[in-house]
Image 1 (tube, rainbow over the protein chains, first blue to last red):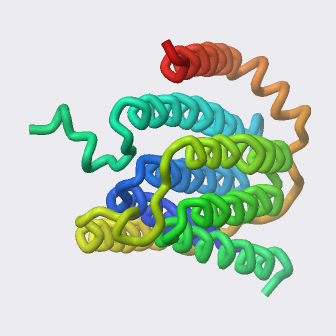
Image 2 (image 1 turned 60 degrees about the vertical axis):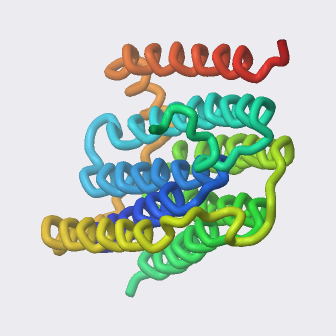
Length: 101
Length: 162
């Protein structure tokens, strides 16, 4: 199987994640876009790991670390989203603009 | 075309179509459910590429935990319906940026790895992952566990009612 096919799928998922982060105004949907981007990176790591396939599976270890960091990120992110909703009654990221000038 | 290539094309088509549906869904719950399809297809792709442990961890953590967490987030906040309520005004610019990124990355990977092939020799056993994790990568492993603990404590502290 050609390595570039898998990398192209990773690039597609990453671009879709970028679109989701930039075009959505609901904060939970922005988090979903970030999840798509992190998964695209995991696809690339696993593809390169299968391509090299030697020694101690470095690509898979890094993919596991990224999954852990993604879990931490979504936990803290949703806590912040809930807090913003409790204070402001909205989670639209373009209405939460107190730090913007 | 080998069996692996056909399986990859099927899984890739599911992941790509699901990804498009996630970022264009008009209903947030539908978006989260499309995300399940994407993540499950990617998990199956990991199994196809010989990464058994990571594939099942992907199913368990992402489909089992993260999507459920996102659904909880959607249920606890008011989620309106419709594209105008969910998208902002930058949709055109965002589409241009995303298309540009995709074109650049695709050109780059085909330029650099266009004729490289993945040969399927053997799947990595979970025992190999465990050995590597607790010998070569034990320091990053501990660091990431402390990070997870700190994130959980922080999330509880942020979300609890005072």
